[in-house]
Length: 397
Ligand code: C5P
Image (cartoon, rainbow, N blue to C red; front, side, top):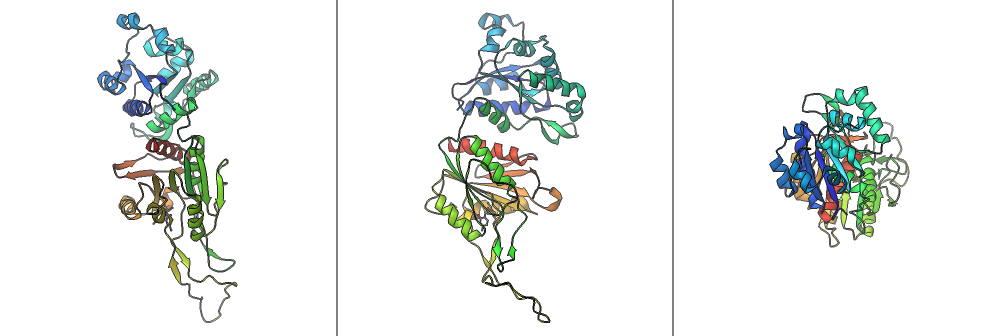
């Protein structure tokens, strides 16, 4: 994991600098030691005192701080880390890095180091899109600098687009990945995904528009962190994850049976859009038109609730995560589900057609847990998955 890893965190200027505090906290939770460096511009947004308090370490600020030189020279400071993280990285700081300038402590450390560097940019969308910034990024990538983000979304300046600093957990995931950390190694994660199909007769069925994209992304993210994944999927439109034990089912009843057969698991994530109802007696032969009589009535009966059954079952995984896809009153319904279904977390999202989430590549979720409700910004389903996988790894310890 990250135990004993030494991270030099350079906090640049920008409204997103406050997120660096959460990054410090999360890195230390995972056993990393964080040495903070605050640029002049960074100091305008977070105080050295709060950074030092969270890092449990002195903050380095000035190249010409002779005490620092006596204690530890900037060359040594830049090389004593296992990884240098720049978050947030401004357009200016990246320009300096690309040009090899060294006119303050942060840029000098970045020039003097032979340690891998991970950059989390944050800036206005126009600055990000500017050819000069794009040239600098290409140069830095060619130099071997790694990037996390930026995310798309609404920005503090009121504009919309790429330029938001990645969420702290994504930055932590990128740090973990650069150490090759596998925090879910040895864990078995069970994931349901996709829609279910409930037969009406041999040729017709009741289904929904779930593509299986979020469940598949989750499986891929958990696999990436070293988990063993059982992936129970309905007939999805996206291909299943590579590296998982894939169990294909059609109906809710089959999904429940497959889930129970796959237990025990350390955690279970119920991302499937399970049909609430099935036809009581599916026709053995194709139902025929009945001229003059109208359609044959369909009697629906309730499907088993897989999430609730597992949450209250004997073989309950230590962590059970459900989803709440709603089109209105999302949080009210999600709160209700958290209580009613007996799971630990609910990942709530608005799937009304205007959001483009159902069947799309992006998601905007809110996480409901006993200890609080956290809205996440809109991001790709892959990003939601990576962040959720990190949270699951943290919860399993
Ligand atoms: O009640 P609702 O279908 O909105 O609940 C959504 C959550 O419950 C999802 O996590 C879904 O996978 C799970 N669920 C289930 N079995 C059902 C219905 C929903 O596991 N029959």
